[in-house]
Length: 308
Image (cartoon, helix red, strand yellow):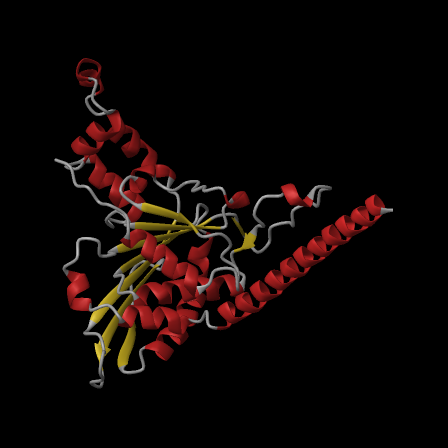
């Protein structure tokens, strides 16, 4: 009888421990859900605006790690008339869903990210997709961007300057009324780029420079090709690929298959000195303001060691 009583007490204690553990797990999950809801509620564009207001533009202009060029890479874009992808049995193994280039939500999200970059005083923004499908919708993205910028820069005169290239946008801000914290006159440029097949000859020429000397010196092919191409072929390569733009400091990649970093068609010479961040899906509600701030902070914390 004593042993049965001990067994009963032991099983009762184990049951109470399991019940308490289940209740604690449920309470943690409920609290996490409430905190995430509150987190997403305050995750607005004001966070980016407040973070940008904390930085002094004069001090950041003299900083070595100032962002001069940010590249946005959008993968898995298809045209509006593309046939839908057939369904398969294992939905979980599908890559990142295809995005239609004419989707208004995609245009709004791209305009929102460009607006964030303008708020952080980035003078040059390039949007890259392999097929060049976004070049057809530059006017739509411009209209979305204009609405966002007019809401943020009410004290400035916003002007889109006409450009000879239809795949480029030129922005200029002029101070209208003096207000505390208002930035000075500034200009920004947004370029929509794609893969160019005619850049391959100049790329191969730049990578094969002085190949005979490499066998004796055992120097790095990429470093030597880059060093020799700076004065000639690399400038031509830059002009073909990026229209003479300087290398991007930060590359934000969107919609990679299964969130594995992929940049098909993006010039590999442009990746050497850039910080690359995989940002997931670019559709509405998937890329938030907090994630943008994390990308900027990640770039701010990297070490830049300049060799000779």
